[in-house]
Length: 217
Length: 347
Image (tube, rainbow over all chains, first blue to last red; front, side, top):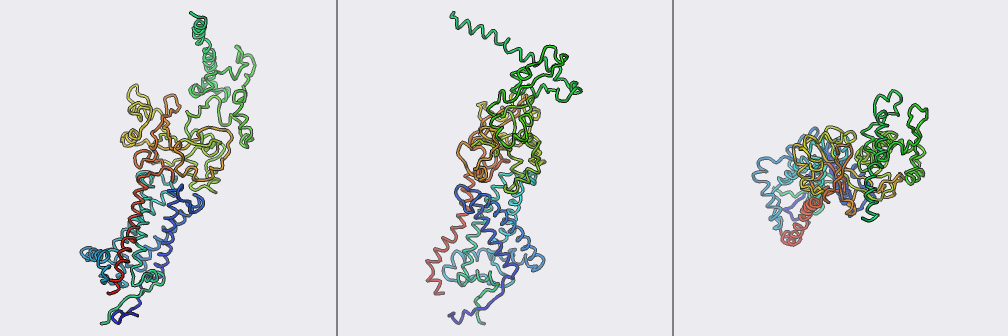
C-alpha cells in the first residue's frame, strides 16, 4: 500500500497510432539487429537457417521500419502537430535540464531522490530523452534507412552510392549505425525499467496509460 | 665438339625455318582474308588480323585447320576443309558433349576460332557477352530473381561461369572500369589500353601504374596510392570472382546454392586477388595483389564489397565496442541500482 503522500493517478500519455508504431518498430529493429549479425558474420551466426532467409527477413524488416518511420513522422507533423514540442530540447533543457537529468540518472537516483522531470501529456520526455530521441529519430534512423535502401538496390542506384563515397563506405556506415542502434536499444530497454515499478513504462507503451505519483495540495 | 652439340646447333639453325611456314602461310592467307574488301564475297571470309593475331590458333597457322588448301586457291574450285574442334580439344569436347548445353550450342557458337582469346587474356565481361548472345540479360535476371536476392547485381558483377562451373574454388580478380558512377554496372565500359596512355610515361608498361616499385606485386600501399591519386578520378577498381579452373561441364555445384559459399570469409586462398589490366595488344595481364587488400576499409577497393566476405575486422571490432558500450549501461547502472535498493526504498 502506498503511503498517503504518494497517491497515484492515471495519465494518458501515448496515443494508439504511436503505440502501434512503437511495437512495430521495436519488432523491426530487433529483427534487423539479429538478421544483421548473421549477414555480417555468417560463419559465426546462423540463426535463420540460410543466409538468403536472413537477407530476405532483413529486407522485409527494413522496409517495415522505413514505412513505419514515415507514418510516425506524418502522424506527429500532420495529426498531433506537437513534434517540436515533444522532441526538440528548448533553451531551458540545454542550459539546465540535460545536466540535472544526467545528475539524477547517475547519482541522485541511487539515493532515492525524485526525478527532476515531471511527465505530462505535453512534456513526455525529459531533456536527455529529447536529445537522445532527436539524434536517434532524426539523424540515425534516417541515415540507416537511406543507407539500407541504397544497399538493397545497388544495381539501379549505383550512381548515388558512388556519390556517397562508394559501396564499402556505405556498408561500413550502415554497420556502425546498426551497432549504435543496438547500443541504444540496450539503454532504452533498461531505462524503461526505471518507472515506479520495473514494468510500468512497458505497460504504458502497451495501454497508453501511465500511473504516476501525485502529491496532494 | 660432341655429336649432341652439333645436333643442338643444327636444330637451332633450322628452328626459324621450321616456324616460318605457318607464319608465312598465315600472312599469305591474310593478304586476302584480312582485307575488308573480301566482305563482298562473304562475311565469313573476313578474318580480323588483329583479333586473329591474339589467338592461340594463330601460332599453329591457317593450314593446320584448313589443310587441303592448294597453291591454286581460290581458283582451284576446292572448298577448304575445316578441322573439327575435337581433333585437338578432345577432352573438352567430350566433357561439353555430356551437357544439356551441347544440344543447343556448338563450340563455335561461343568461341570464334579466329578471335578466341585464352581465358587469362579475357575479362569477365567478355565471357558474359558470349553467354548473353543466347541468354538475354533481362530474362537471366528474371529467372535468377526467383531464388537469388539482388539478382541483377549478381548477374552484372559476376561472369556466369563463376557459378556454372565444375571448379571447386574461385579467384578474386580486380579490373579497371571508367565512369562507373554514371552508368549501371551492366553497361560500364572497361578501361582499354588507350585510356591509360595519358598516364604512362615513355617506355613504361601499364603494370607500372600500380606496381610502383616494380617488384611484380601490387601492395596495399600501392593500391591506396592509385585510389587516392586524383588524376585517375574517372577510373575505378571493381572486383569479380572467376573459377580457379575452367570446365565445360556447366554444372552447378551444390555449394553454389548456399550463399555463404561466397558470402563468408572463406579459406585464405580465396582472399588472394589479382589485378587484370589491359595491354596494347588487346589482351589482359594479371598481377598479384597483396593479400587482404580487398578487406581494407577505404582505399583498397572502395567499390568492391561482398557482404559477409570482404568485411574489415578492425571495423567489426569498433562496431562491437559501440554495441558493448550500450550493453554496459544496464550492467553498471543495474548493479548500482541493485546495491542501493535498500537506500532507495527508505525514500
